Amino acid sequence: MVTDTHAASAFYATPTGAMAAHLLRRRLARMWPRLDGMSVLGVGHPAPFLRLWRGQAARILAVAPAPNAAAPWPPGAANLVCTAEETALPFADLSFDRVLLVHGLEVAQSARPMLREIWRVLRDDGKLLVVAPNRTGLWAHLDSTPFGQGQPYSSGQIERLLAAALFRVERRDTALYVPPSQRRLVLRGAGMWEAAGRHMAPRLAGVTLSEAAKDVYAAVPSSGTRLRRLVFEPAGSAV
Image 1 (cartoon, one colour):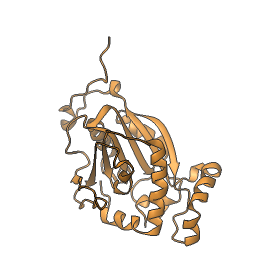
Image 2 (tube, one colour):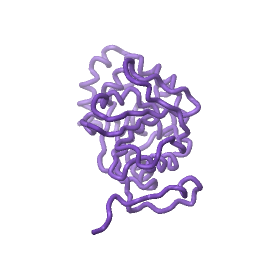
Image 3 (cartoon, one colour):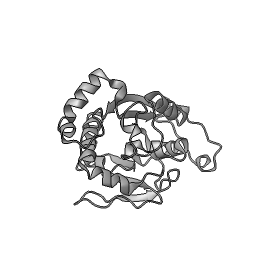
Image 4 (cartoon, one colour):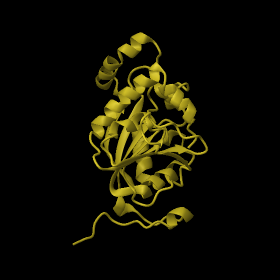
């Protein structure tokens, strides 16, 4: 991944970034309202969003793209952030119940190998939630925000990419219908923009959210050196 962690942190410190984080957290909370006792991993630049599950999850970790410096953890929380290559996550197989990928897929240098690496560290009954810029939305065309970096995707493209990495999309959502503006009038009316956009212009969402499950029965050994070492096991045994 080539996410500019410092630039992303600076964006979320602005009024526009704070508004975008608030709107996205609302949608994330609808998809994953409670993660009690779970192990959660954030990949990319997840710090503005992982706070949703503090006090619920048993552990929360974040991986920032190497060679960037890891973004600071929210004040008052333990520093559980590390850097790693997108295709070499420093975790054992089946380590996490939930993985949030945000500001990661669109800037991945090797999207499918990265998703397969997430597949490896995700438990068989775990879920992956991908937040990615929508190619028909306004945010993907403004490079002054993290959503305007890299390759935007349609929901269909994300589904096909996930299927190729042995994931199965189960739910979708959208967010950021409000224009990427710094004007106070726009920021104050962000809620109205979101409500109107969802009903009147669904294709203009700034981001798509795709929740996917591991398709463990479709797993086959890879010809790649790293994946060839992995052991894929079905979720349960036949009776």
